Length: 201
Image (tube, rainbow, N blue to C red; front, side, top):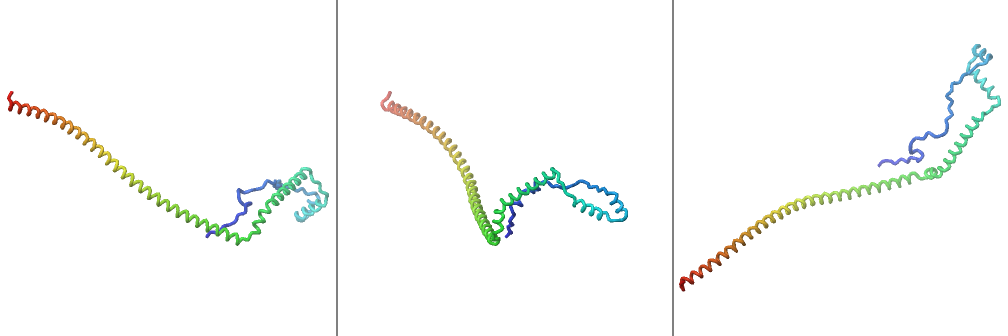
């Protein structure tokens, strides 16, 4: 069974690069040595030592912050305060997950996973059952359709035969009526002839 990995909500979504300005100085720094420093460099003293000593002297001087730098520091402070507030809002949610017993949570997730697997297998069986019923119904439908076509052809043939027999019956009835009239005429003729033969004209 695959292991489920918990991903923090803060790690999800597209990558975030933040909105805080990155104060990276990309300018090229130029150092101008004083005549005394230049003489020391020519005398063979290390440049790093000379610059380090000059930096220490510079740091001992009182610093003056420009107003633009002051505004930048204030903006950075406000941004840090905002991030702190956001972290405080997120803290209860994160603490809730930190204090969870991971083994208990894993067991619960495993049970849920097994339950979902069983439900999926049950659904697969139901789908297979309904698929078999559907295929049986389609086969019965096809068979009944063929039988229906055969019966329709049989009905059509019987209708044609019935029409033919009806036409024959009408012809025979017409012939019968004609023959009855002829027989009736012959009987009258035979009766009249018999009367003449017996009693004379």
